Image 1 (tube, one colour):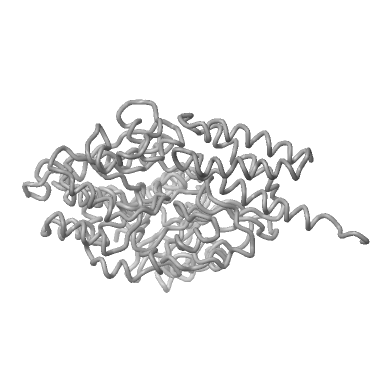
Image 2 (cartoon, one colour):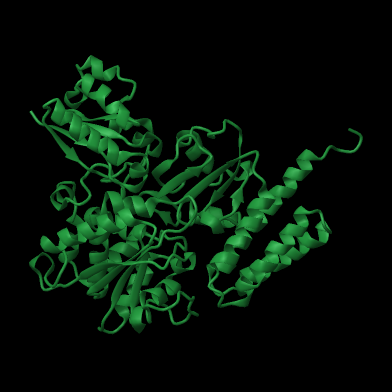
Length: 524
């Protein structure tokens, strides 16, 4: 009997010797004359357990992890490849985790977009279809363009790239443009600190992105799509290209999608290595072969985008949600979440935590509950103090703000952003003034330089924060910093300069509170 064993091939697992583990399993199986089928799946997002090795049984997959190359001999010694519920030796192995789906970190999630992540072979299209893949496309093929857009609008899906703009409105705008060459562009230039959801979806379930972009093409009358991929994601690049080749071969891309008269072509283009190219108009400039400078709006990209043509620009996670919305219906998706924040968001837990990884949940849980349930405290064992949510342009939140629901309007009300769902945890040793300075320095480094508030304001901001940290005329410089930040917010051309003040102001506010706590009251 042949046993099926799964070892992930994603970037995180490879960085933790995943390739060596897979090779060791193959070689040891040969030496022991064990019949195995080795499947290179994607990660399930429980990064502290990678490499996570799974064995298929008739009752589900059994997990072992984290497995190192030197652990493989001991796994074969307990006959792990033939593990079942009666195999006491395997169950007593220190790396035995039981049924994968019963691991609390995974079981407590609400996985829609990431339901197949870690389950399927990411480049096996038959495996994708066997797990409900292309059901959304099949339904879309039966609808007219307006009906597809209506379904997306009714789902309440908002852009998952950070701006949270309603996806249906963007698609409707492109659909309303006269018939002409139109484009679908996926922003896969994931550059926010502490974020990896885009990468994980592309490496673990690339066909869902392909399916979502194809549906978008049908919805607005576009026949060409581009995935603008972060150049630092070589493994995602390999997997995406393998999946696209397979989709062409099986008729899910090309001049006659699924044998119809509809065409959609797709290719991957590598990014320019600049954070600013994550901004949609700068991305389009780069995709056209130009320097990544932010464009003034209007015109909107939906009307004059790539090569001056109507263009849908959405994030990986936005397109990744589309197959589920079309397959199961808008109402099912909209039943998740709260208020105007519908569906789920993959939260990415990183920084000073014991258990970093991806957690997909419906909007509405609190930051405190999320971290209590999944992060399992700080790696250093010290108290959590500040948490940056939403990438390098997101605010630093202190404990009194951790009960805020994780949804767009609630975060906006406290001057924070959810962004791409990245969460970076700091313990009580963090130097918040240094973090504020880093935010300004990041803007100095990554600004495209087109507008003065961002280009010059960030340089001046770095200088002012340095004076505050040195104790130079602190009150006056704090006031100057606030004025500078307000100018950047109001006058910057894009979110790079307009949002840099969020982490700066929040970090400096918390920094002043830290100083107050450390300064003894008079008479003590």
